[in-house]
Image 1 (cartoon, rainbow, N blue to C red):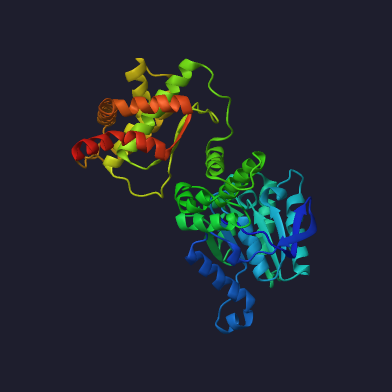
Image 2: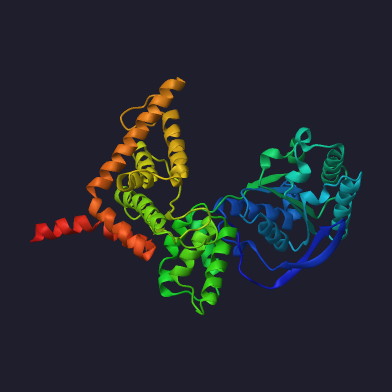
Length: 458
C-alpha cells in the first residue's frame, strides 16, 4: 500500500544481526512521498509527530510524547516504509530488527540482544527502534512457548517501561497479526498509539500508481487507462503494485521496447495473480474443451454484468489451463440477484462442457467449490430473491442449497442456449486467437442486439 519515489540517502539506519548494530543509509523519504494512506491516518500520524518534534509545547498542554507505536495490517502494505518515513521526519537514527532475530534456544541470548538494541539507541538519540514481525517476539505468553521466549519478552517489556530513560527514543513495532500480541506489550506506556495500515482503496491505489509511473515511459493507451487499472486491481497491496510495474518494465525491455504498453500491464497483472505461464496446450481436444469452458464463463459474465471481463485466455498459467479475468471492483454489499448471477457465471464452464461435449471434466472442481461456498453463505444469511427466511435445520439447509444450485444451473443452461450463436463464435475465436480482451468478448456477446437494432432501422 505504501510505496515511495526514488530519492537521496539521508539519516542513519542501523540493522541488528547476531546482536550487533551496523549503520546503513536511510532512504530520504517523508510522509508526503507515501501514497495510499487514508487521510485520517495521515492526520493522526502528523499529530503524533508534532508532539515528538515540539516536546516543550506538548508538555505545556499536558501531553506526553508517545513511547511506542504499533503498525498492523496485511503483508505488503508498507509498514516498514512508514516507520522509515517517521524516523526521517523526526531526524532520528533508525535501528531495525525482526522479531525472529531475538528467538534463540541458547539461554539469555534473546534478552541480551534486546538490552543491546536499546543501549545502542540511547547512545544515539533521537532514535527510532523498529521491530518488524513483532508477534514472533511479543506473542501471548501462554501461546508463545518456551521459558527462553518468555524471558526475552519480559526483557522487552522492562526496556520499554521499567524505569529506563527512554526520552528521545521512539519504539515502533509492526505485525500482520495484532491478535497474537501479549496484552502487557500492548498497554499504554509501552504502545501509546496503534495504526491500522490497510490495503489501499481505489484512490489509494491511484496514488501509488502515480508514484510508480514517474520516470517510466508509458504508451498513451496506458496513461489513458490508469484510472481503470486502479479500479481493476482491488485487493492489491502496495508491494504488489510495485511488482506489477517492475514486471511490466522488464517485459518491455525483454521485447526491445522503450515504452510500457497495455499488453505489458495485462501480462503483469496475470503474472501477479496467477504466476508464470505454463507450456501451451498442444492437445487439440483439450484445447477445444478449455475454449468451451472459458467461453461459458465469459458469455454469462458479459450477459449478466456487461463490461466486467478484462480478458479470457486458454494459455495455461500457474495451475489453470485457462481463465477469465474479471475487472475487479471495490467490495460492496451484494444482493441475492447479484450472487445468483455470480454463481451462474462460475458454473457456466462446466455447464457449457456438458451441453457441447456431453460431460464435464475434473477441471470444474474449483468452480463447484467456489459456487458451493457462495450458496452456503446465501442460505446461512437467508439471502434469497423471493424471501428472507433463516434455515436452522441441517437437512433443510442442504435442501435449500440444492434448490439454489438447481436454479443457477437452469439459468445458466437457458442463457447459453438462448445465445448459442454468440457462444459458438466466442469458442471459435478464442480457440484460434487463444486470448481475447474484454472489449472483444463484449462485442461478440452484444452482436445479437446490434443485429436486432439494424432490423428495426430497416
